[in-house]
Image (cartoon, rainbow, N blue to C red; front, side, top):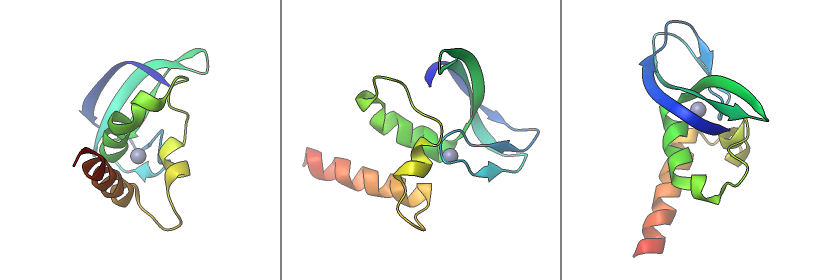
Length: 96
Ligand SMILES: [Zn+2]
């Protein structure tokens, strides 16, 4: 998706994360975004972990971030939190 605006909110209902597809029970801090997804104006929620992952990898995306992106990146039994730590370690290795 192409995000036009995004802000951190405390959810009042349960929402599924756009990227890791986990369900987050309210109340919970999540990022509410609106923008264009698959040619349509859209909005949704991403969890804070996925938001950080997106910020580290968006430079490689020409078509925006697809739904379920982080979920697809995960190894078996890996959590998005573990994936983020992995990603940070790789970035550190590249810059040192
Ligand atoms: Zn997520």
